[in-house]
Every structure is written in C-alpha cells, then in structure tokens.
Image (tube, rainbow, N blue to C red; front, side):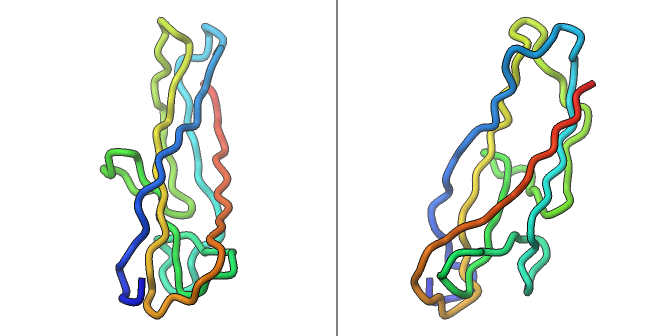
Length: 113
C-alpha cells in the first residue's frame, strides 16, 4: 500500500430489499458520504490509517458510485417482490499509507415507486 493506486481486495456486500408491496415496482437509491479530500470521486477514510480513500462500485465493477451518485428507476422482480443491490468496496492508497483502522460511512437513501 506504499504506492498510490495500490488497493485492498474488494469486499462484496448486498443491500437487500425484501417483502416489497406488490404495488412497489421500482426504486431509486442515492449514495451520500464524506468525499475524500484529495479525490471527490472516492469516499474519505474516517479510521486511523492515513493516506487511504474508499471506493464503492457495483459487484461487477461496471458502475462506480461516487458521493452524490444515484441509480434511478430500478425494476423490482414482481415474482419475488425483492431486489438485491450487489455492491463492493475497497480502500485505495494515496501513497505512503500509515497503518491503522479503515472506516467509512456511506448513506443509501431509497425512494420507492
């Protein structure tokens, strides 16, 4: 992690919507958090490790979720009334990382249609 761009392994996770009412056919979600002070396309590490920034993407890596980004009108499976929003995150070096904890907070605000 001493060189800029080095990164931890991706950590996969899912935000699961379950038992949606049949009248709820889609949703939108907006992501908000503290942007990294050097690169606003990443989130800030609020842990004790220094010179790190946090990335958030879809699990397949095709979509990057920067601070303030959103997904609009995502269809909910009407056969299950559920949806799994599959995401991943990792820490990336800004150079000369000092050891410590890695923490971040990203709020996902859902709007149901």
